[in-house]
Length: 185
Length: 125
Image (cartoon, rainbow over all chains, first blue to last red):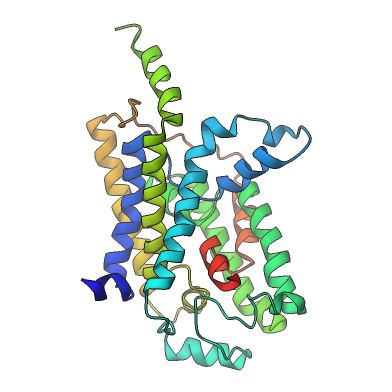
């Protein structure tokens, strides 16, 4: 039981559990599973001025989602502190490819050489976190969702817009992997 | 019978602010945060492995998640179930338009390599 809670889960356990969040949220409160709308809700709650895009009752439509997001952070921290702090067992080929790009620290969930406070002062760290964060914010707003809303909720509901968005995610990810990372790292 | 939709709206507005419901969303979020971490889907390394087509893992997780969600949605639609908050369960359709914004927005979003918020929290803490 304790190893089940602290060890990484196999894909056939993790996938269906993630999928079950869609019916769980529908059954509890008729809510469509998604994460990135929270960026809009936070702006609506905090942004000064009267932009039309942010003018709506964020408490009515978004409070549940913000509370869910707070839960995700708490759950992430709990899991990170209860698990064995080892390296994620990625395949040998991926490791070799990343080492050749100059990544040597494979501990944690993201390379500290790019995603850390110290790295934020470097060009690659700044580009990855700040410029990357801007792209994530713009992209989710423009596409109307992220991986959770489009890939999981949208595809499960057979939405064509979501399929297009997911193909876009993949095109962006492949571009980043093969054309941006080699220059950035 | 005719007053029923009004009752449903009233319950809805009420249920949004009922702390009991917010606690449920908070707890579901906590579980989801644990799932994201234990499944390693938030790992930048796993995402790189996926985009380099060097492991089936991510495809297995995303594929089985979508299959589970799709099956659940089909069952819910069939049963015309009501949510615990008293609404008839329905998923609003997204407007397609030219479709370009989904393609462009989706591509831009993932130029950063698809790193969800919890991963940032981990790596910056």
